[in-house]
Image (cartoon, rainbow, N blue to C red):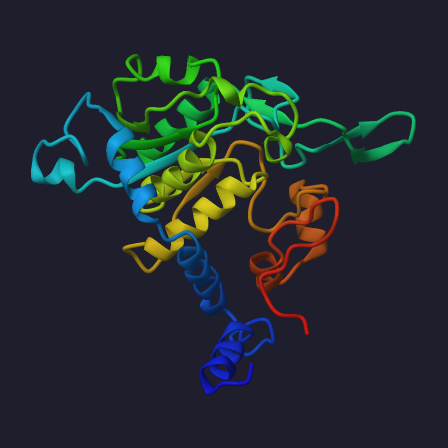
Length: 282
C-alpha cells in the first residue's frame, strides 16, 4: 500500500494473523466487513428482493405482526442446499467427516468422490432446536431446490413464519456445475445476490458449512449482528469454521490438529485447486 489509508488498512487487516490480537475477533470482523462491502446490493438486487419476497405467516413474529414480545424474537436463516453439489441424499445429519469415509482397500479413512445433501426433515429438526433454545418464530429461507418440494413443506410447518423468494427454480436441476453452464437466465445470479441480502440480517443460521454460500452468508450475518457474540449456527453436513473442505473433520482430528483460532478464521476452506485465504501473505 502506498497511501496512509492503505498502510493503515494493511496493518489492521493482518493484525490478528501476526499474533498481536490474541483472543480477539478483530480480523474476523474485518473479513465480514469486506464481505459486506462486496455484497452491497445494487438498485436492481434491492428491487428483486422487494418484488419477489413472499411471506407465509402462521403466528405472531418478525415480518408477521403480533405482540411486541413476539416481534422481538430472533430470526433464523436457513440455506437448504439441493442443487449441483448433491451427489447423494441423506435423511440424517452429516457426521463431522461427511466428505470422508473408510476405504477398506486402502485400510484408512480417505476422501470420497461424492457429497451429500440432506432432506427437509434434517433442516426442520435443527430449526426446531433453535426454536427451543432461542424462541425463533420467523425463518428466512434460501434454496436451490428445483423440484418445489422444499417450498411445498412450508404450509405444513406451522410452528414458524416463512419468508422466501418467489422465482423459477426448475433450472437448478443438476446438470453439472452451475458456474460452467450457459443455459441459465438472470434469475440464477439475481436470486443468489438477493438471498444474501434478505438472509444476511438474520440472528442465527441453519446451513451447510461445507458450502461457500453458507459461509459467505454467515459472514454477512456477523457483520450485521445486533449483539456482541457470534451468531449461533448449526451445520447439517457437520462442517464448522475449523475444518477445511478436504480434511477429515472428525472431532478427534480437529483436536489433534490444534489449529489456532486465527487460522480457523483466515483459512476459509481448502478446495481442490488451492487454498483460499482472507489475509495477505506477501
